Image 1 (tube, rainbow, N blue to C red):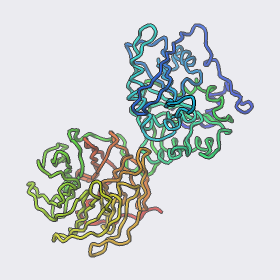
Image 2: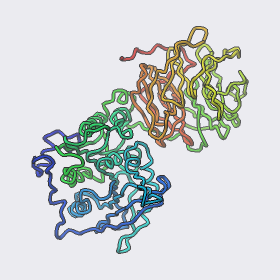
Image 3: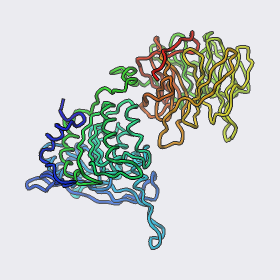
Length: 588
């Protein structure tokens, strides 16, 4: 393994950067690769202004595009995107490294942050978008680059008429930045690892300005993404109201190592932004592009839960992509999975052989589904206010009316629990219904903002209900008569920067008592103590519900908008219709 492919042991750092002496504070000097060299082909830098963003409407920004002399439009070029315009004398460095074959032929896009021009420049300031675009988590800036700016770049031509064609492979793309531009660079790759796999940040702002301090925790919990990261910071960096940059970057590096990322770093004594970034930039580029075009890979995460659950080589597989909006998966005793395509009013069956067949052609726009101990499929829907069961032939029987169900679970003894969110445009509270096998019904709790998913603990003594409009999953103790006691906001979930809630929806449990929650950030997996231990994202970034299916109930099925995916895990789901099982006690 390359000695620099893991986080920088001091000896490796000194070896790589031995040409940079340890001098006085921040007295770092660029090396020969940062200076124009004779007999080296020099690229050109194009300039244009971009002012047609719909993601950041009204903004304008300067863009510079470096096109190397060696670029041949017959082969799309690798890409380097940098925030805050040209930094570290990058075009000159690229000329020298490309000429020596130490990085691939790469087009550089150097983009300034947006500004909203004032309507009265004589008496008012522009609106400065830099922190808004760069410091915030979420995909706004990423979408701006991918959907707006880069297509505009590809409309340009070099001065000799060469069209600009950029590789679409993440393996051929790097993104970089300094300070707030640094965290922006990481966010771009984090949000879209299918589009960028190489990141360089100096004095990155991984602090509490717009949520950047959350990254180390998220890194430790998320399934690792194929990203290679180089970090730089100095001991005299900022230490102000938002946090301590020097400590935050070290925390970030430790989280990346823990999570199994390919990461390198250089620490120094500089300030913010400091000179060290420019001094190390050529060597950082060599490391980022080393062994290209081999793809970026990661080692095994040290997250114990992920290490147990994930099976090497077993990723997500597409079940179907022909849905309008899939929801409500449920597994029968054989492990066959049934899911709704709600807008189409259809229910489909996924056989053990993976074949998808229509089960019901008119499921009345159902939402949640669950099988009962008698083998019947129970379904609820917010549109038709009924609880309905279906036999193996698809014949329907109405169990209860007047219940606008979002999700449903049926216990081993036949009790039915249904979540009922508020009606559209209503300020009413949510309800949780208990429906007895006889059809007798009653509200057993109310008050959640938007009750959505529902599940039972493996021993069926606790009921879990997700609140779609908060970051909580509630826990209740189930009495012998089916009523609920000891309500508690128990499971704490992560929220994305793009929303004020977790969007917690469908839920399931496994034999170990872990709770799997479909959220805006992916499938958040919690221990019995209510803590998120890991997060598994879905391929298209969407998920509304999930269930365990397959012969051993070790395949996780997820409904993700117009697609349904499945993934084999080293876990076995517990089915509510089955005999209750006592899980092992959690580690507290």
